[in-house]
Every structure is written in C-alpha cells, then in structure tokens.
Length: 317
Image (cartoon, rainbow, N blue to C red):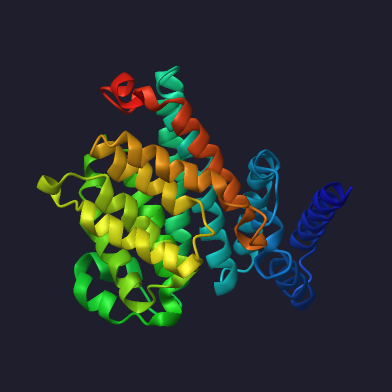
C-alpha cells in the first residue's frame, strides 16, 4: 500500500507540474516547481529509492522518475540541486539496470546486449552532461574549459564541487566502458580519469568510498601493461571497507570481478563473493538497494563462474 501511494503521489506531482507549465502562472509556477523538485531531490523523498528492498520495483519506477526530473529541470534550469539529482539518477539507472543487464545478456543474446550497451552509453552521457551543467553555475563553460585546459580547470574545483565532479566522471567513464567501439569517446578516457582523480583528492570519503569503488574496477580490470594495478585496486578496496565498516557488498563484488578474474584466482573470487553475500542488506537503510543489487550480481557471478575462469573445473577440486 505504501509503495502504491508513493507512485500515486508521484503521478499527482507530475500532473500538477504539467498544469503549471501550461498555465504560465509566473511566480506561483516557479515556487510550485521548486517545491516539487525538493520532494524528489532532498530527503526524505530522495531516499525512497535507495532504501527500497525491491530492485525490480525501482528498475520499473526509475524511468518515470528520470523524465520527471527532466521536466522539472527544463522548467527550472537554474536549480543546481536538481541538476545533481538528475545526473545521479541517470548514471545510477544506466549502471545498475541497463549496463549490468547488457553484460549478463551478452552470452545468450549478443545483439540485444549490444543494443543495451549503446543505450546505457547514451544514458551515462546524459547524466554526465547534467552534472557538468551543475558545475557551470560556479565554473562557467566547465566542459569547454576542461578540454582546453584540463589541469587549470580541475585546479579551480573545491570540495563543494565533488558531488558534481564524481557523477560527471562516473557517467563519462561509464559511457566509455559501454561503447568501446566509439574511438572518439574512448580517446577521452584520460580526461574522465583525471576528473575522477581530482574528486579523490578533494574528498576521498565521498559517498562512503564511492570514488575508491570506481578505482577498484578501473585499476583492477586493466593489466599492468596498460597502466592498471592490482595492488592499487586492493588499496582502494581496503579503504572502502574501512570507510563502510565492511557493511557494503559492492567493493567485494568489484574486486572479485576485476582483480580475481584477471589473476584467475578462483579461491579469491569465491571468498570475496561469499563475504558480499554474508552482508545484511538491512543493516544500513541508505545502502539497502545498493547491497541488494551487489548481492544479486554476486550470485550471478558465482552461477557463471565457468565463463570467467579458464580452468574452472580444476579450481573446484
């Protein structure tokens, strides 16, 4: 009943917004739009997604939320808080529900997987663009300046910019990972990496270690010959575990799917995923959805271990 009422309320908000857009009510219109935006982008309204215990419900609800964010932002483009909420929502949806689905589908339906990858890349970039739009308020022409003077532009950033910097870099790198055939996009990886490293310098604890989680995969899934480092991936992993008290499942899954697979260490793989599955997803309500998604991924990885380990039968003995 609660979930139904939340969805009904969301539809009511959107209908009210559409009425206001059509009515041209000036100050009333702007005030009401911002009021609705606060419900979606600030607690407690913004937590109804991350605290939910039903990933399938969130997967189905997010597209409506994304378009609601965009409708609100189109009517109030100077709302910096809403820029951030929209960026986070698009990158999260692309990563947690589209990109991940593509990876799981590839072995059984290659063409559908490619379609999902292309779609996730577009969603990632949409999120990146909203994050950079938010940075434009304090740093006009941010993306253009970034491309012309990377070091100087990053040097102008401060700790208060980190949320926008993180989601912008995450969306950028996510798009590159999803669309590796786009060489012009792939060529931008050093810029995306530099932006994320600047976020790490400014606030390494942001998002309960979210930046460190990014670098677990970034360092751990690349060989040493192309600049990766299993050792650095482990260091980032250790820092996330320290910051979260070991109550987040995602760092275990990330280290297992990157370093353990690259080193063909099945015992490490199995141990890490076992620890991820042992975490109580309800221990921290704000991480509930994240933990459930990570545990779902852990089960899938274990069920498909043979696809990742050349001598899988040998590892079972």
